Each structure stands twice: as C-alpha cells, then as structure tokens.
Length: 314
Image (cartoon, rainbow, N blue to C red; front, top):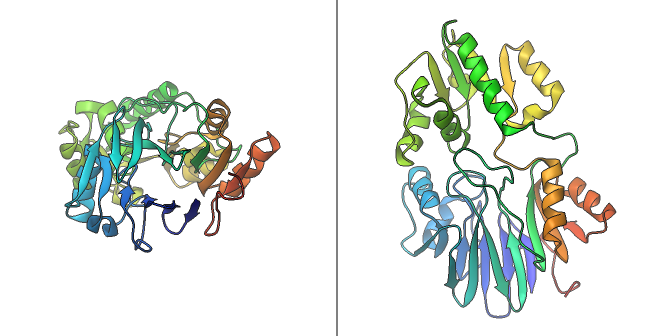
C-alpha cells in the first residue's frame, strides 16, 4: 500500500485506488474520490468526472462553486457507513464548516483516518470533531500546527464580536469580513437579524438556510476590500491569534478577531494523543513543524510527500 500527496491525498492498494480532496487534475485512474468539505483548497472541477463521496452540504457548495455536481455520487452524513468499490467508509463529524466530515477507511486491513480540516471546539453551526480510537494511520491537517496559535474560548470570541458590532453600528456601519463559505454562515447565524450580507455571502446563506437580516448598518462581506469605505472594518480569522498580526491590523483600522473554524495547536496535539495512531502523516500548514513536535512526544509522525509509502511501516 502507498499513501502520497499530489494536489490530493492518494491511497493505492493492490485492488483499489482513490484520492481524498484533490485540488487539481486527478493523477491516473481512481475508483472514487472522497471530498471532506466544500472549500476550494479541498476540491476542484476535476472531481465532476468521477464517483464522489461527500455530504449534501458539500454537494451544494460544489454546485455553487463548480456549476454542477458529479453524475456519480454517494451522499453521506456524519454517523453513516457506506461502501465504495469494496472499501468501507465511515463518516465522522469534522466540525469545520457545514457539511465537513472526516473519513475512516479500511484498506487491506489498515485503518486510515483522514481528518480534512477539523475543529474540536464545535461552533453554533457544527458539532465538534472527536478522536477515533487507535486507527493505524492518521492523515491530519496542521493549518495551525505552531505553538503560537492558541485560540480563546469561542464564547469569548463571540462576545467580542457582538460587542464590537454593538459599539460601532451607529458609527456609519460595521462590515465583518468572513470567508463566504464557512465563517460567514457562522457570523450570520450569530448576528441574526442584526446583519445583512454581501451577495457572495448571501447566496451561500440562502443555500444552507441561514437567515440574512435587512439592516445594512451591519454587513457580512467576503473580505476587507468588499467593505464599504465608510464602514468600521472587522475581520475574523484564526491568524489573529498572533498578537503582532492583530496589532498591525489595528494600525490599518481593522478589528482583527481570532475566530477560526480549525483546531488550534493544543487541540491538534490533544487529538493525536487521544487518537493514539500507529503512524501520523501531516498535511497543510505547519506540517513539518508539527510532525517534529509529535516525534518529540514519541509518535511516528512525518509530513506526507509525493513518495511517502506505508510499506516501511506495515
């Protein structure tokens, strides 16, 4: 068996070959594709020609982003177990955005957990991702796999955002920059009727049944550049857990609020410890730095690469 990364996470067994979250042309033939969620850094238009396993919400996002959905598709939900070309696929909540999931698959007697992007804290829209007991291999994201990234309690972050809106809505308006698929729905849900939405946010809100208010003094926008010039600017991002970045944003007149839909560094470490896999492959973000940290804790952990195979471990 072999696992490697080539703009997607490929698994090659003696009788099956599939890819997880391909972001470019799919290399060679595959039996099926697993898509963890609808963000563009985890899927591309190339999936439309293949058999795809994903949630209803991810297929909705796919339709909006790519203009269609695959003709061959298997719709899943957290808690379901399906079979794809003889491979059993268990579907688990990832807690990242609406419809995001983790996949636990068994190939030739080896259990592999693919986290995709995941969040162990949970949000007002998603349940928290929970560890799986002792898979053979854990393939995990490490977007915030640096000790500098420790997020505040989510309730505190929500209160901070609500406080900024309350204090400044009368100062010409407040624009809240949030990624249009994911955090924008979370912010819209939090603010309810207090906030309206930019058209690029509103189309996702409508598709997912998230109410959008009519008060134009508070506006959810896809990025800071889309904010009306006279509005107070707020941006929500996990990167603002870095105090220096938050200070620089403040100097530019932006309230940086550390709201993330990923797990922070301590949560990533805790997830690995509670999962206790035989082998960890890290991908995305601080992958090498986090793998080194895990090795110091006694785990066999490596960044996934184009030549990484399981034969040396199993």
